[in-house]
Amino acid sequence: MDRHATHGAAEPRPAPLVEAEAPRWDAFDPDAYVRQNYLELHPADAAILRAGSDHLCRHFRRHGLPAPLTGIDVGSGANLYPTLMLLPWCKEITLLDFAETNVTWLRDTVHRETSYGANWDAFWDVLRRRSPYARIADPRGQLRGSTRIEQGDVFELPTDRWDVGTMFFTAESITPSVAVFREAVRCFVRSLLPGAPFAAAFMAESRSCYYVGRERYPSCDVDEHTVGSAFGPYAEGLRVRRFRQGHALRDGYEGMILACGRRQATR
Ligand SMILES: C[S@@+](CC[C@H](N)C(=O)[O-])C[C@H]1O[C@@H](n2cnc3c(N)ncnc32)[C@H](O)[C@@H]1O
Image (tube, rainbow, N blue to C red; front, side, top):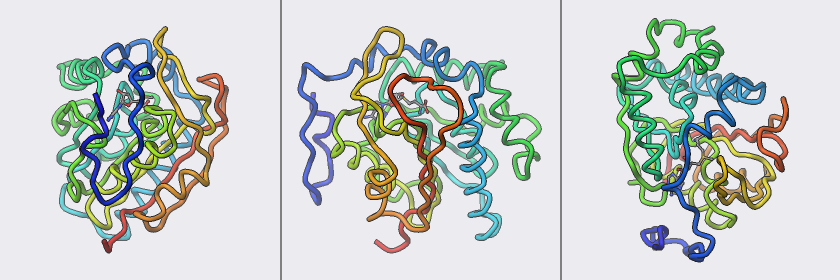
């Protein structure tokens, strides 16, 4: 299957992955992924939570308190913290992922009565120190009430649709190709409305693959320059930073990169 077949015609289309290299997204194990990455809050994630939420707070302070917005988190997988970052401003947040296993995990976790596990409280604790997060008394209830979970493809996102967006460890973690990475970034930014703020995170200088449990997935080597130039044509107010705190969760990468900005107001 060529998942990139629906790319916009305006730009050259990157070559699809060859069949032999095609990742088995239907074998993605969300429980193993959480065990590997999110059972505890690691310092780099805490730094990204602070920097990403700072960006959103500053943006919405400057633009006044907007009417409840629609948000999207692209490639949510089994990570709830980008969505928690969006919570104060959104009446509806779409959690979009390609893998059915992740979509099921998200539904079972976010929409069940007891909601998410206690490991995510440490992530919320970083956010809830400041307004407007502090005003949310029941993050589990608010998450359950405001999220819609969808199986979908970053390369098929509609354009001009959402008021705010996040995309964490996705564009560089689905392909070994920098051209495909750039296309995923383009599709993400263009799914937002002009002027919409975003926060997007990337593993820096990854080797060409990573493991979730025993399953191997492709990744591509990006640094601040690659990230900046991928967002550059579509974004304004862009700030790209690398966080190196903490031990390596995945072997073979050099910290995490956060890109914050707004979709370009003029098309
Ligand atoms: C490394 S995981 C990142 C998960 C999570 N966002 C995080 O911060 O840890 C990459 C995610 O991208 C999803 N994915 C793979 N191909 C995709 C596509 N074409 N569109 C949207 N999501 C995709 C995978 O299912 C997986 O959940």
